[in-house]
Image (tube, rainbow, N blue to C red; front, side, top):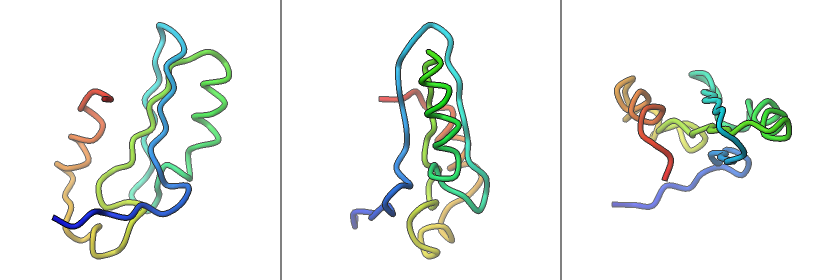
Length: 81
């Protein structure tokens, strides 16, 4: 399987700060880059923050064409590792 190259700035974001967690998901045409400002602000305020990169986002249109809504649901329901 080929390794996927993620565009700079589109990497997932995760900070563990406290007992209260916030899950942020970017939109269909976005990537974590579009929501990073919110994630960083919440992390600075003391929240644990998870901002996953949904499969096919922040890479290429070919990657996006091979993903489904089920993939994206898995991305936000699978615990951070």
